Amino acid sequence: MKTYWNRREFLQKTSAATMAAFAAGAPMSSLLSSCSPSKKPGQTNGTADTVILLWMAGGMAHTETFDPKRYTPFVKGMEGNRVLSTFKSVPTVLDGIHFSEGLESIGKVMDKGTLIRSYVAADMGHILHSRHQYHWHTCYEPPQTVAAPHLGSWIAKELGPKNPVIPAFVDIGQRFTVGEAEELKAFHTAGFLGNEFGPFFIPDPSQGLESVRPPVGMDAKRFERRNQLYNDLISSGPMGEFGSDYQKESLKRSMEQAYMLLNSPEAKAFDLSQEPKASYDIYNTGKFGLGCLLARRLTEQGARFISVTTEYEPFKGWDTHENGHTRLEDMKKQIDGPIAQLIKDLDKTGHLDRTIVILASEFSRDMMVEGRPGAKVLEQVNQPDILSDLKFYGMHRHFTDGCSILMFGGGIKKGFVYGKTADERPCKTIENPVHIDGIHQTIYHALGIPPDTHYEVEKRPFYSTPDGLGKPVMDLLI
Image (tube, rainbow, N blue to C red; front, side, top):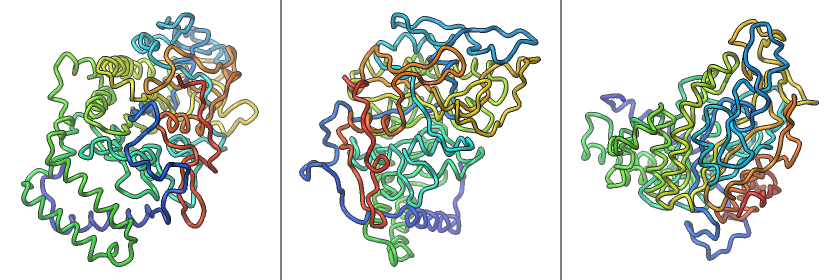
C-alpha cells in the first residue's frame, strides 16, 4: 500500500470515480416487476438470504474433479484420445457417487449439497475466458450496449444489506494487474444499478483489514476531511453538474458505507489474525483458502453476496494449457480442505440453512475437443496425438458441453445429483442440461427475488436474465 497520497493523486482518483459513476449509468425508472410494492429491501420470502460464490477461474475440467471417468495412468508414447481422467476416482459420502482423487474432503460433505453434472456453457464462437466469465457472472453474452450488472449486484440491489455496516457485495482474491484486466473489470461492476451496489474488492484476504483502514500515514481526522472534500467534489464537479440525482446519491452512499465500516466494530471480521490458530491452519492453503475463511467471517457479520476466486491469470491456476495433471494436483490441495471446512463451519453455526454456497467455473476441459461436438472452434492448444511428455498429460482444451457445479445450503437439496455426462469421449451432457439463466434464476428464486425483475434502461426493459425468460431449476430445490 502507498505510504503517501498527494493532492494531485487524490484528485485524479476522485475524477476517475466520478467518470466511473457516469459510465455505470442509472435506472431511468423505478422497479418494473411483479414485486409487491410493500416489499422492503432486505425482506425475502425465499429460503436463503446470503450467497457465497466459490469461483474456479480458468476452466475446471469436470472429468478431473467432480465427474471422473475411466482412469488411464501416464505411459510415455500413449495415445491421447485414450485419456478421459488422469486421476483415480474416490468414493464420496453419497452411495455410488465418486469424485476425482484429491477431493476427498469435499466428497465427505456432499450429503449437505447438490452436485450438478450437466451445466452447458454458451456457444460464443472462439473461446475466450473473459467472455465466458462475463457471461457466467452477468447472464448476458458480451458485448452489450448496456453495462450488465454482476449477479452479486442484482442481489445487493434487490435485497439491500443484511448489515448496513458490512458491504453487501464483497469480491475476494481477484487482482486486475495480471492480464486481461480490462476484460475482467467489465463484469466486476454493478453496471447501470449504480456504484453503491458494486463489489468491495479485497485482492488479498490476508490483508483484508488493510482494505478498511485509511492509507498509512493518514489519521482519522485527516481521512474525515478528505471524505468531506470528496463529497464537495461530487457536488461541484462534473457529477454535480451533469449527473442524475440517482447517480450522485449512489456515489455518495457508496462512500458513506465505506466510511461507516471504517469506524465500526464489524471491521474486525476482516482481520484474519483474530481467527483461532487451529481453524486458521485448516484454511491456510493459500489466497483462496484464506478467502474462504474471510467469506465465512463476513457471512457471520451480515454480508449479502461474497465471491471468492482462485483468481484468473492466463496460463495459471485452472487455465491448464499444459501440465494439466500436475497443475490440478496443486489446485486440489488449495481448494479441498478450505471448501469442506467452510461448509462444516457454516452448518455448525446454523448459517448454512440461509446461505447458498456455489462452486463453479466458466467451462470445462478435454484433452481432444475444443468447444463441443458439432460446434468445434479454433484450437488454441498444441496437443499431440501421442503423449511423449508428462506435460501433455491432462485436460488442456476448452470444453463447453459438460461442466460440474456444486451447490449447498439455503434451500438446495441435500445429497442430490442432477444431470449426467457420457462416460466416453466426448464426455458431453446427455441428461438434464442446465444453462446459466437457469442457475441465476434458481439462486434468485431461493432468495425470493421474482424472475421478471427488471429496470427500464435506454427506454427498454433490462431483466435479471435475458428477456426475463430464465426459469429456476426447481428440481434442485427442497
